[in-house]
Image: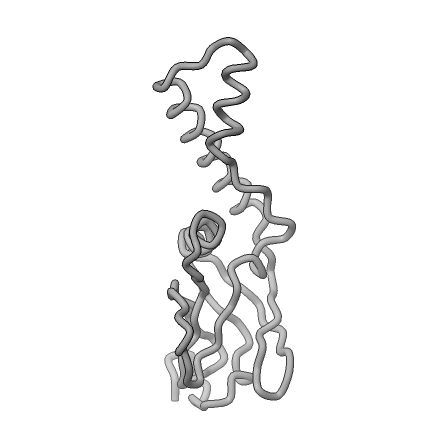
Amino acid sequence: MSDDGSAATTDPTAITRIAVTADDVVTALETNWRSDRHTVLRITPPFSARMRARLHRRVPDDDGDAVHVEPSALVAAPPAYPHPDETADRLREAGTYTTERHHERHAEAVEAWREAVRDAFVDAVELSTPSGSHRVGVAYLG
């Protein structure tokens, strides 16, 4: 038996709800947009009704029975990630560009993006399983 009283199994369709930290979702999404590293939220067996999804850098030879959730699947219409050049262009157009101001404004834009992502979290997600798509609820921690 698992902590939630359900029997543990290798069948991911036993999952009814996943828990994931809000920071892990934001970090995974940001990593995927800023680099060529592929980051997912990973759920590992044995599976039970309530499971934890954790940040995981996916590599080509990932195998096994783990379920991987794309971070973008946890966000409804994710906002575009702010690009430093766009921040610089806006400051130059306003005639207020300095290196320090650019750094400050871009840091503010990234923080606003992170908050917008948190505001767009979904309540449920489809997991890809060997027997097909399986819908589960999502609880965000933190």
